[in-house]
Every structure is written in structure tokens, then in C-alpha cells.
Length: 279
Image: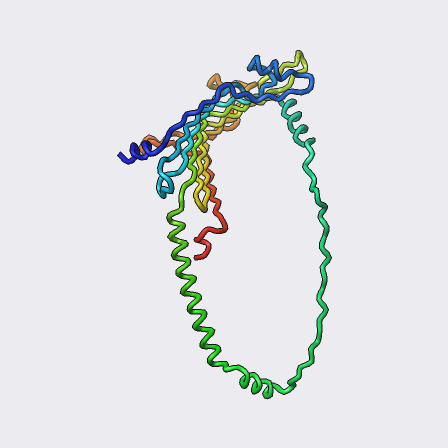
């Protein structure tokens, strides 16, 4: 089997990161204590884990197999923050000063050239033409120029063919794919009593896939999202479930056994040295 042969062409590494936390603490809040408790109101993201499968190709300069393959999976991300803390984070980001340039920018003064009038030594056009014809063999020079131009075109066409063949055989340096089953973003309403927050909104993003390929001249990036749901957690709907303010779910296509995507993004970045720019 071709797929099995490709898998045997890689040296496999497995990495796993556990207990990944994201904490935002003010001056009067202890982030060290929150890190030990692992689930507090200053945790922006609950504990999560990341699985990575890394493969290194044993063949060098293979035009078909990528040199490196990376596959990552995040089962679930729960992000929770209150409206008050959200504005605190935004104000904090705006208060960060941007680095200033070490060298001040000096505007260059534009210098306009002064026109210089050169008097013509030959005021008679016929006399000028006779002098030029006597100095230069125009017909021979024209034939020589055309021959050189044809030669240059042949050289350019040969270079284009060689560079196009080089482009077709460009190597894939990295192939990576990351999948995320679900992201839940909880936005709570700040309450003055006992410093507690009440659930307000929940945004759910399902089946997020991002993959990229880095080649000799190109970089491809594709991302897709299957479902997007917005819940209002302070109201209950007719089905005794939380009220859906927005629902953009797509049903599975059973005929092709594929899931339809709600949003797809395709991005291609190529180098200025790409041989296809010469065609």
C-alpha cells in the first residue's frame, strides 16, 4: 500500500503537553495560587492538553514526501471571562507603549535639476542627416541589433523552461495540520455582590481545521469552520434549552460521507523569485 510505504518513510515522534493554563491577574490577585488551584475566576482558559505527532522523512530531497510532517489535536478549549475583565484586558493592551525608532527619520530635500540649453551646431536637418549617415552604417547596425535581440530571446526562453522545470520539482519542507474539536467562549456579566459573575453569552465554534504547506517558493494555508452557535444563557427557549441567538450549523452530507464547511479560507503566498512570474 502506498500510504503504508509513506508512513514507513518517516521517523515518528509523539509529544504531549498537559495542564496548559492561561491566567490574567491584577495586582491584588495571586496568579501563583490560581495556578495551583487550576480553576478560578482569573483563569481565562481552563486546563487543556495538546497532542503533537511529528515525522521526519528519512529521504533527503524527495520531491513527493514532505521533509517534516506535523499533526496536532486540541480536544476542547473553554475560555471564560467577564465583561469587566474583558475591558481591563483591552485597556491593558492599549497602555502598552510601542517601540520608538532609534534613528529619527529625516526627510530628504528634493533637488530639481536646472535645464541647460545646448545650442545645435547643425541647424540644417538635411545636413545633419548626411553627417549621421556618413558616420554610422544604419542598415548594418539595425540588422546586428535584431540578431542580438533574437539571440537574447532564445536565451530567455531557455532560462524560463529550466526555471519552470525547477518550480515543478520544488520540495515540500513542512506539512502541518491542526484540528480543534470545539471552542467555547463564555462571557459573563459582572455582579457587584460577592465579586461573582453571572453567565450571559456563550459562543461555540466547532470542528476547526487549519493546515499549511511550506514549499521552496510557496506557502499554502487552509482553514475551515463547521459550526457557529451563539447562546444567551439567561433565557430558556421552547425546547427547554438555552436560547440560540445565532445558529449556523450545517448537516452532514451522508451521500458523500463528508461534513460541509460553514467557512473556508484559502491563502497562498509565493516568493518573488518564483519562476512562474517569468512566464
